[in-house]
Image (cartoon, rainbow, N blue to C red; front, top):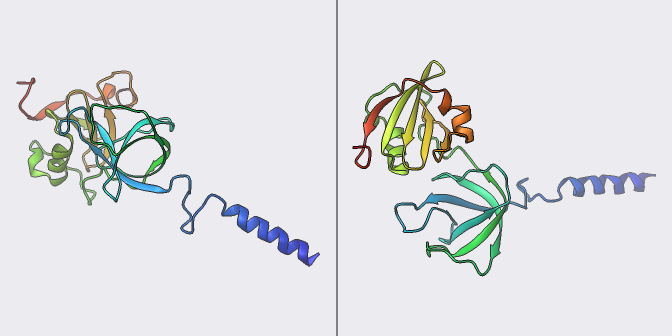
Length: 202
């Protein structure tokens, strides 16, 4: 009887750790990397995943539904290399299919405090200055939002919405039926342009 109990405990222990490494992390997502948006930097390129060894992976297929890449994300993911793929980017080390992925931290949050910013000059605010550098928008639009403020870093076609604490809310490519519009942008009113860059807005 005692042997049966010992065997049962062993099965339970090994079964509970199946698929996990010593840190308790999912072995199906063993790789860490950083998402970099190369649009406007390298011709024909958009999101590439940079590994610690300097390799750049082009995620041409993503099997995880609903995941959105954003510039600066730190991610843990699993992938399979794809052969016989071509791209005009030509900066990637390999084309890959993403089999699992999750964000390691809120890497699109640019502020370390919790103070709500009420400003008409985004360059006076550190996190907003960094967001402009990251997203290269044509406009920054300020909206009343949940008793505070929200800021839309508006570009063509991509725009990025943040709350007044520098926490990322959502991204849109301009489709009024996407999740960002339905959940947030379609409900925002009385927007004020607080900064406008050069380009077709002029």
